[in-house]
Amino acid sequence: MSYPRVALIGLGLIASSMFWAMRRAGLAGDVAGYARSAETRETARRIGLCDTVCDSAAEAVAGADLVVLATPVGVMGQVAAEIAPHLKSGATVIDVGSVKGTVISDVSPHIPAGVHFIPCHPMAGTEHSGPEAGFSTLFDNRWCLIVPPADADEAAVERLESYWHALGANTERMDAEHHDLVCAVVSHIPHLIAYTMVGVADDLRRVSDQEVIKFSAAGFRDFTRIAASDPTMWRDVFLTNKDATIEMLGRFTEELFALQRAIRTGDGEQLHAYFTRTRAIRRGILQAGQDTDKPDFGRAKVER
Amino acid sequence: MSYPRVALIGLGLIASSMFWAMRRAGLAGDVAGYARSAETRETARRIGLCDTVCDSAAEAVAGADLVVLATPVGVMGQVAAEIAPHLKSGATVIDVGSVKGTVISDVSPHIPAGVHFIPCHPMAGTEHSGPEAGFSTLFDNRWCLIVPPADADEAAVERLESYWHALGANTERMDAEHHDLVCAVVSHIPHLIAYTMVGVADDLRRVSDQEVIKFSAAGFRDFTRIAASDPTMWRDVFLTNKDATIEMLGRFTEELFALQRAIRTGDGEQLHAYFTRTRAIRRGILQAGQDTDKPDFGRAKVER
Ligand SMILES: NC(=O)c1ccc[n+]([C@@H]2O[C@H](COP(=O)([O-])OP(=O)(O)OC[C@H]3O[C@@H](n4cnc5c(N)ncnc54)[C@H](OP(=O)(O)O)[C@@H]3O)[C@@H](O)[C@H]2O)c1
Ligand SMILES: NC(=O)c1ccc[n+]([C@@H]2O[C@H](COP(=O)([O-])OP(=O)(O)OC[C@H]3O[C@@H](n4cnc5c(N)ncnc54)[C@H](OP(=O)(O)O)[C@@H]3O)[C@@H](O)[C@H]2O)c1
Image (cartoon, rainbow over all chains, first blue to last red; front, top):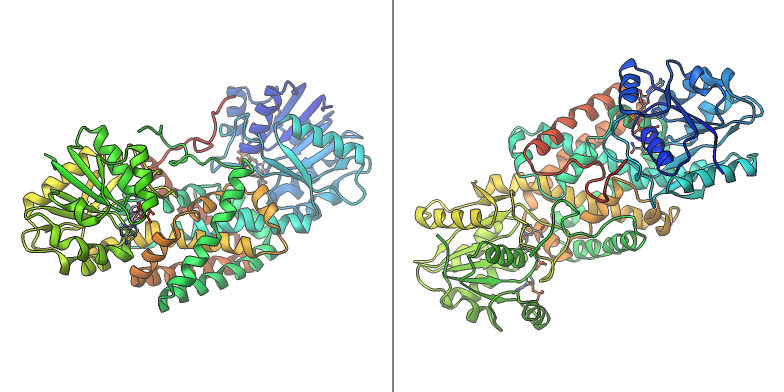
């Protein structure tokens, strides 16, 4: 079961991928879109992203059965306030933000009675952003976390789950606090660390930029990819998931200092044991089909 | 110009990739190999890695024009001592270790007069190891750093450079101290950080292993790949490149604390500015042809 009319607010990587995935699934009855800048709306019209691109959020959501908030998390509350008066009774509003606790407290107060607000988070992304970054297969075999409020309408949640399944994703329900902790570990802290490491490299005068780029090997090269992600999106993530981020950062630096100490004192056994333990997690991810095991990670054709 | 007889000591990712790349280039006159364990030697014989697999390092290097030390860096000195009496006069000995300062002081004393020792480091690798991990294209368009001693024979160095070019790599000469610093930045610290982050995730009892694996998104997933690299190789890297590692770790934690403070105080401007700056390095790496820009990093075919 799907939604005859869908409105996408924000037309970046996630919204555009949802559009192409809806089209692939034959789900796109009528999709209206809106983004803040005239430039993005123009691009969307040019590449055929959405059936209609509207010049206001109010216009886009009018009559929509499903409204998707796909802007950076810091402006979700403001967008919700803007569209609230124009929402159809019985409609479902979802957000796809990377943080749930703050978004729920920002958005919920604006949602009128008779409208279902069901926060979501598709655990899929790339370092690219904007209306041209999307592709139909982004959600395939990835997980979409669904964080229904305590008093959620079960039928509305199930309808939304079917929708995500049709887009290629698996779904799982979770509460907001747990969501924010899990995401701090599997996504937010890794991003912060990658940004930091690339920033350090950029700062070094003894190692010229040119060298950092030329000799960039496995490790750093992957960090630069992660650290090329959208600055606005990630600023908002860290500002809105402050508690879990700071808690996890504390754990991270504690461990890092322990390894640093092992290096300084020459404790090879501790290092070897630590580096051995981490392999098991990788194996799990491969078995779960969440990554590929190609030796060069699909960078080039492998031949002997 | 190449080497009629080559000996590979250690038959893991790097040595096996060198063998397949030599074969691709039509360079492999006669290649003898040796690895510590009977199991690895057996695997090498089974998959046709090397023309001859010998049961001792001494046997493998006998009569070789080029001897490649491709073991973990911690045992290079020991291997050099073992082969020294059997080296042919005029031969070139290289190592491919990820650290240069320590390897040079461990290996050089054993090299007899009349033999050229020219340390190398191909800046190419994957998280896989062992005799079956190699492939012929590993070095294509990657850099091989060459660290010739002050009194190096220029003709021997140039011959070695042509050899690496034939294997697909570009070469650059560098001194050992600078090499170890550059590599701490672009490779060693990123690996240590990835190991640490995956270790933290593994430790967390509130976020079950299952969740860390299932919801593993961009960021963490890439870290798990890096943190699946060989524990022995990496233990040796950190123990032998201690000074540069500890210096760079200090810089890293300094920056990380500054960002943590910005998160705690809600300084969105500082975060945004930092996250914007790091994008330029990524662009440089793409322009230099050192990585691909596919939205999903080549993980799946992209289609609309
Ligand atoms: N990227 C990922 O890996 C990923 C994964 C899962 C979830 N998410 C979440 O998904 C959401 C969208 O991310 P994305 O990667 O798709 O972002 P994106 O590519 O940067 O696109 C963001 C979109 O939001 C629009 N926008 C910004 N402020 C707005 C406002 N005040 N009113 C209306 N539109 C506004 C932007 O319009 P302009 O182009 O006109 O500025 C743009 O179209 C974020 O909350 C993010 O946390 C992202
Ligand atoms: N992997 C990378 O990304 C990369 C990149 C650039 C440079 N390097 C450097 O290249 C070198 C080799 O790395 P690799 O990835 O090819 O390693 P690997 O796949 O783990 O293989 C190491 C090989 O060395 C052998 N070996 C270990 N101890 C030995 C000893 N005492 N005597 C003889 N052979 C011994 C092993 O034999 P068994 O199988 O019998 O144990 C194995 O064949 C290391 O110094 C590393 O720092 C690695």
